[in-house]
Length: 179
Image (cartoon, rainbow, N blue to C red; front, side, top):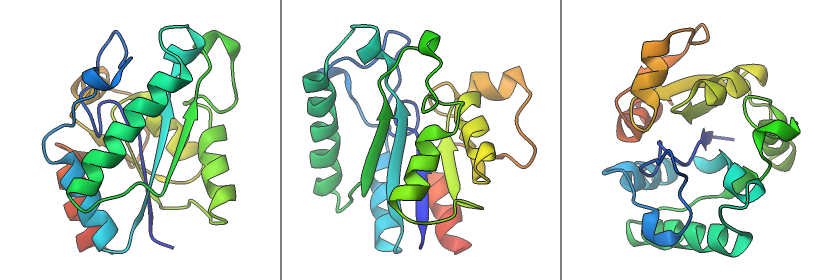
């Protein structure tokens, strides 16, 4: 199975230090939706795995999260793309939830649901926690320099073997070329 795992905020859409709390705040990064569509057209299943602790913190509710994702799905459909599954952790960091990245629980659930080994599967994020979760399940950590990516790169300490790209469009191009 050809699979790609994406973080949401900072990879697909612009991020905010104050959280994306409603559909009006959700704005796609130029080229990201088209990149997902190209991956789909090349036979890849695209999955989102995203921490959404704003729910646990009471900053927004499930209805708002669903509305944000509905906007994402509609925008993707307009360019011929789709998300095959979306996994999220709603818990605040202080709960030490096993599914909250950098812990691997969410990615382990992706592997279970798709009945596949994640070894070498591209896992794209803009934060160290995304890369650490990828490494924990044997996936290929990929850092994009959108969102918090430049800060993550500058801070150093990236896992060995991390690939770095300007944005999701560059990632898609590389993944498709090497498949």
